[in-house]
Image (tube, rainbow, N blue to C red):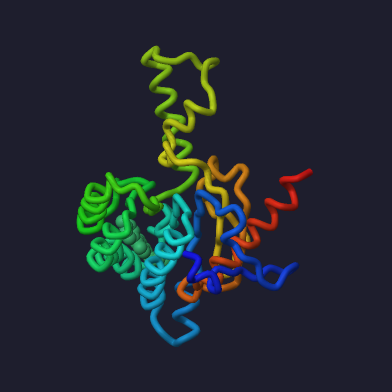
Length: 254
Ligand code: V07
């Protein structure tokens, strides 16, 4: 890793260049991959060309996260609200999991990456779900980076579903309402078993959480960048981590 040391820098507003390898690397990074449509429009291309370019960047950023020693990378690929988009666009998006895995699964396996998914399987077409389940199965014993796709995911739906499961536990007599703890809640969330994100990155300049991991982001540091997802490079990633490390230094010591 050290032979590539000259690459492992992030710029921050306060300091020009900081070596991010000597600071704390976040365990869990979540990303809202926004700006694919805008990237395409800027180039006079159809929106779907932006989504496709965005998919290529998933590979780059996954490898960067793996090299940095990040343990979990959660990517918001498709929200429960995205079904409202034009049918042609939705159809195109639903082909991306299969295309991505067809291109990258062998390389992901070689790199010890474990694939996971958060979100509702209901409503996903078979041609998307089948390769995802196969990818999850083929990588389930891998011990490296967890690449966690949020697909057909919505934070409120997740919380509502969790509430329903807890209610069912209560009505079966397994649990009393007054005994409910945060741990019970965490056990019925789709992120169950994963630590909360340490850092959320949102690309493309929007300053919102947009129904993403509402429970899990209670203490998450947030990094917003104007870079559009298809042009979000590993250098942008280092910059976000440098920013995260600087905040940890400022607030940790007092
Ligand atoms: C999607 C590319 C990234 C930018 C955001 C929107 C478009 C990768 C996947 C994927 C999902 C599951 C999986 C493997 C790959 C994906 C959708 C959209 C729906 F197991 N990128 N990507 N899925 N985009």
